[in-house]
Image (tube, rainbow, N blue to C red; front, top):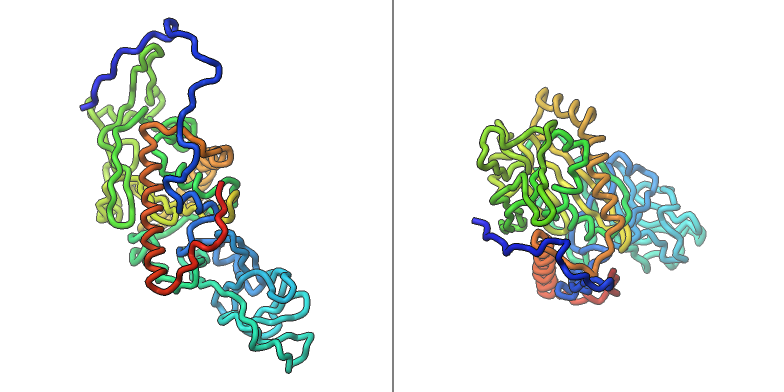
Length: 416
């Protein structure tokens, strides 16, 4: 039951306030020191960086968690090395392959083994160059999943199997995917917080073509539930209309929108999809028994469960001011059953959802400037996400100490 609020003084009768305003609030994120220091991203995770088809035998440059990395394919396998030749600092991504299994710097021909990073030759110093055997280039583990190349950026520890980090339902279930990778301005944390934010979709996205004919709630009663490595937004109640004292009525309904309360005038609530129930839920999705339709896990993976598909967003940190938006739409089907999804994705979802709808989020992330910030009740979702990031990072640092790796926090902090 929702408690009744005290009557408010009509706006016309309120005393005039100072033009200086009233803006108390949090001035920084020091309550979550690891989160505050993670402007360039959290280390110790796999991140998608490019479509597999984009990585060939020609070196390609990517930036991930502030690290400049050279990525290339050799004999079908993807390799990644630090994108800076230790000789004079020229990017290895400007180089080329002169010998199988290697990459050679464009400047003086320093040639590195792709697998180990060892300096195999210094071409301009001849085959007996004494520098060989004395230089090893830093390497990064690489893998391929969902049609994308993933890289692991850590602090010297071995990467865990990538399947342990993927959403559980993506491992072992047949699926067809639609993927969008887009470089975007704005810090990755703003993107993650926007994705998991409780309040924005019901207002910002009410004008999106994707939701044009579907009513959106005005507000919800929501709580955050943790299960495993994910935290879920659980909708206990959805309110489709509301009266605001001294202002008037606001409704998420319209004559041209599908009304989810039409069959049940008292209450419609769903935690698969965010605008009412569905006649049929995909078997794989139903089997997960998600507590809520929106969930997030480290290092910034959003999952939105709809009745017929799941939408994932991976917020890949590039540096303090840029990130990669990786949107993945997954339909759990195989064979001929995949054809309707292909048609729907290419004909509508790609430009409606991954385009205009997601473009509204892109806009907000670009113009967000926080902290300082003054949060409100629905922002409990953001607070719980920050707490999750803080707790998981603390656990990781303890694990690194157990492995004798104690310099994880010695890197300069890049805060925003």
